[in-house]
Image 1 (cartoon, rainbow, N blue to C red):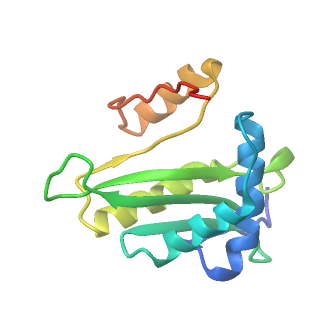
Image 2: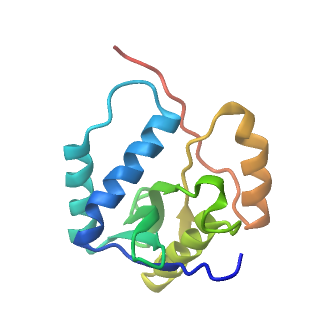
Amino acid sequence: MLGITTNIRTAVTNDIPHIIGLAEMHYNLHFDDGKFDPLLCERYINSIMLDPDAIGIVIEDRNRIPFGYLSGVLDHMYLTNEPDAMTHNWFVHNPQGQYGNKNYGLEMLRAFEDWAKMRGARSIRLGITMKPKQKRVFDRVFKKLDYGVETVYYKKEVK
């Protein structure tokens, strides 16, 4: 689609209400255990913005309104002196392709990869929320991007 203008950038304070709205959409699409908490979400976003080893990335439309976000951190999860970069939350809202058919999620991932490389990360670990039928698609997409399965989390309700 011609005439669609988007931009990927680091999130700023004015983005917080938009990110909260996107995070709530993401939660409601993928989770049914509990209730989304906008105050907790705001606190999380603020902590990401203040942490020198974290980043919040948004993709915005021509009016500078975010329609997607990705957050992540540098972490020493394997107790080495070289950090690993890890995605936390990642979501794009592009209903009926109103922003075109580009894969904006992968564009944000590339921006995160660039940030991680500049910060000296030895690897990038990305997490995604998926339904069981989506696994084959995600496996194929991320294999093309040179990602391999390394850590798997299983979930158990404890209530």
